[in-house]
Length: 290
Length: 328
Image (cartoon, rainbow over all chains, first blue to last red; front, side, top):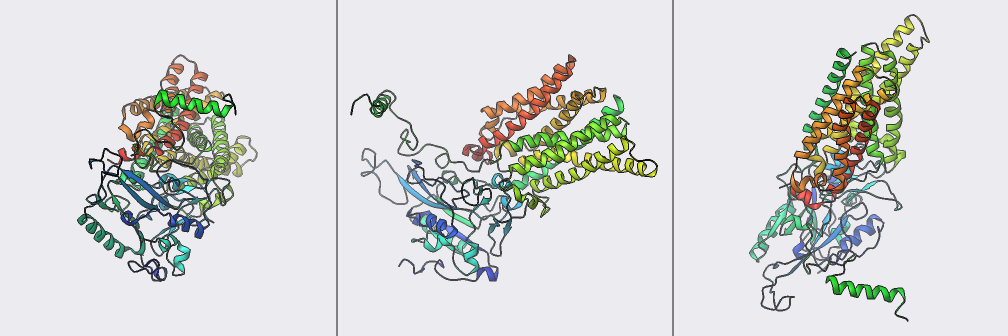
C-alpha cells in the first residue's frame, strides 16, 4: 500500500500556492517508525549539507536538534510509561512482575511555521516572509546573517549556518518545500513518509484529522495523547502541529511558547524613560553645576 | 603486545575507574539512571537557540552607549556654551558611533557584504531593524554636526555662512542627541524582546542599565580627556547611583530556574562584578576624589557587564529548564 496515498493527500499533486490555501503538516508519533526517511529526503531535496557525524548516545537519535542544516529531526523518546494497551513486564528489564512499563516514541520535529512568527517579526532585512500558503520562508539571497531570528524563535528552530559549510553565514530552516509546492508537489518529507506519520494538506483538514486521531487514540488506551498546537498563546497556533503522547516538555517543546514581540512594549517604555531621564540629568548637570 | 603499552594502560585505568566509581562517563555514554534518560526536556537539549553573537556585539553595545550619550552631553555643552567640551564630545560620538559601531556590527554579520540589506525595510516591531535605522540616522547627524561645529569653532568662514554653520551644528547635534539616547537604550530592547528567558525576564532593567552605563561612560571618558567640570562629575555620580540601584534590583529579582543563569553561574558573576565596578565602587572612588580611578572603574564595569549579559544569554538559551520555568 506504500505510495498509494490512501489515507492522506501526500502523494497527490495540488494547486495550493496558486489558490492561496493555508497548508500545514500534521505529524503523528503514534504511527512513526523512526526510519528517518523524512530527514534524508529533506537533506537530499534541499541540498542541506551534512553538519558532522557524532554519536550522541541519546537512544537512536544522532541528529540532536533542529538547526541551520537540520530541517527535519526524528526524536527518539525512551519513557517509563505504557504505550496504549501494550503488554509490558515479562520481556522488559524489570523482575518480570509486569510492573516495569517502557515505551519508545518517535516524533519527526520540524519548523512550526507559526501563525505569529518570532523570526519573521525580528528579521531586519525582510528576508523572512510569509508565503501564499501561510508558511514562513527565509530568502537566502537577502539574509545578511544578523542572527536576530535565532534568539527570536520560541521553538529554537532557525539557526545561522557556521563556516565552512556551503552558504555559511545565513540563517536557515525548513522552507516547507516552497519550491516543490509552487510546482504542485508535496513537501519531500511528507512525500516519503511510509506510514503517513507526516501528513501534508490543507490546514483546516489537518486540524480536523488531528482532533479525530486524538479521540481514536484515547479510546485505544493512549490516555496521554494530545495535540500540540499552542493556539492560546501569543504564537496563536502553528501550521506544522503535532500529536504528542505525554507532556510537550519531554519533546523539548515549550509548554507555552510566546512570540518575543509581546515584550516590546515594556522594554521600549523603559528605553524611552531612560532616554528622557538621561536628557534631564544632563540638563540639570549643566544648569546647576557649571 | 606488552601490558605497558599506552592503550593497555588506558584499558587498565578504565577498569579501575569502573571498579571504584561504578560508572565510566564518556561521550555518548549515559548509563547512570538508565535505561530511562533523566535529563530535563529532550535529553537536555536546548529548547530555544542560544545567541550566535560573538565579542563584536557586546563591544558594540558599549560603543553605541558611549557614542549616543556623548551626543547628549555635546548638546547640553552647546546649549551652555562649553564649546571645547562640545567638540570633544562630538568627536567621541562620531568616532564611536559613526565609525566603530558600524564596523563592529558589520563584522558580526554572517554575511558582512550584505549589510546594506538592513536598510531595505523599516520594521517597528523588530528592535534590530529599529537599531539599524537609529544607528544610521545617528551617524547621519553626528558626522555633519561635528564638521559644522569644527568649521564654526575654527572660524573657517565668516559672516552669514558662519551663522549658517552655527545653526547647522546646533540642529545636527540636537538630532544626534535624540537618536543618541535611543542608540544607547535600544540595545536593551534588542535583547530584552527575545525568547531567551534570562533576557526577557529583565527587559525593563536592560534599557535602563545600557542607557545609564552609556551616559556614565561618556561623561567619564570626557573627564579623562581633561574636562574636569562639575557637570560631568555630577553625571558620574548620577550614573553610578542608578547602576548601584540596578545592582540591588538584579540581586533581589530571583525567578528560580527561569533566570538562574544570572544567579547561579559565572556569567551572572560577570554581570555583578560589572555592576559593582560601575555602581558602588565608582561612587566610593569619586567620593575620595580619585576621579580617574572612578572613571576607569565605571568604564571597565560598563564593558564587562555587556559581555556578561551576552554570556548569560548563551547559558540561559542552552538551559531547557529555564525555558520551561519561565512558562509555568
